[in-house]
Length: 224
Image (tube, rainbow, N blue to C red; front, side, top):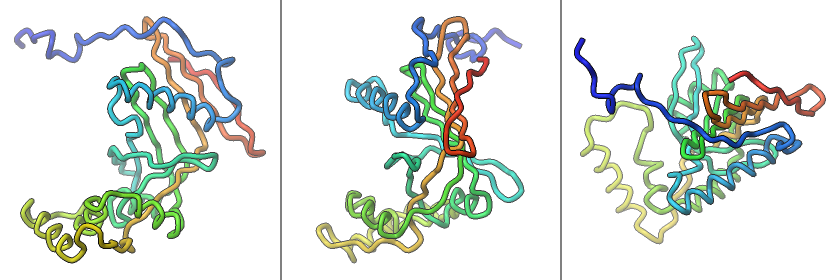
């Protein structure tokens, strides 16, 4: 085996993380309050170009046979009830969630040496909530929700663009686009939320909230 260029060799890649830590005394009482603190910091970093799309998250699902799949989607809302994203209900992720509602979310805020991992269950949002969000989308994105049969095989890029153009002719800019019946939101209700802070020498801080039966949250420190 020839010597690899160290710039290209993944085994040679090293990054020393930050000195300052993350302690139990830093935590909010509720994981969604703690998420708000970190998300606001990530969003401010995005304004300065440090982070690209702080609301991007990796959504991992599994089908009825337990075969996993992951993809990046955009968080569109979060509150005390959980995290909301939107998708085609005939997509792979939605079909997975129809038979297996357990889901994992990962927010990879690498420039801050932070990540947040959420596990919980997903359920569809109501049609009124879906419609309210759909109306806020750019006109092109509304048409795209109709044009793309997400996760299905498409004959060509030209076929996809032809479908979009046909819809654009039917619903020109300024005309209301109906909400697709096959499109909508999922709200992920968290059962576990882990906050990961990179530290020197790979001795990272990992603090995890775990939901209790009485509605309270237990905090655990995990080994890095």
